[in-house]
Image (cartoon, rainbow over all chains, first blue to last red):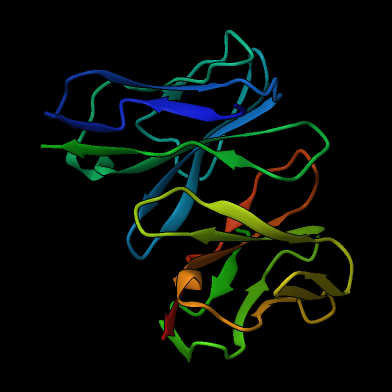
Length: 112
Length: 111
């Protein structure tokens, strides 16, 4: 089944404790992206990647890191999480030249 | 700053009625436009895309684009309670570009 997977789906952590949210897709898509979604603010792009080793900042990159060492994986790293990073996070992937983005199921992160 | 604006709603319509959702965008370079449906707590799902001026129909859904007015709309005919969700409008200026999302309009269809 073609899909985008994210892990974990739910995470509660404390301020300053490094964490990684994984994202993987099995559709051989070149383009991958991370969004956060907050009430009243909608979906905002954090980082995106057009292919392996090619990443760029989105609208709200502060406090986040990403890497793209393999085509299928695009982990989101929070080196020192803070409470304002409490949010619902979505990973998405897209085939080059096509406009449909496929979203993962989401990761609900709470930083205490 | 590219912006996509939507009325947050909720838009309430009775079952069987036509629901009309609207969206405006700020970047005149935008070429591609999308409507995503998002149920509460779930991920967005693409339901319509439109690239040229005019109407595009797919089943009960019709997307309309007017680039001169920088306006995109989504009509849902014969609305069903299962259509109750938040509808996100998004714009992109190329096939490889990032998507800019609106904040979404909540649609409530009452039986």
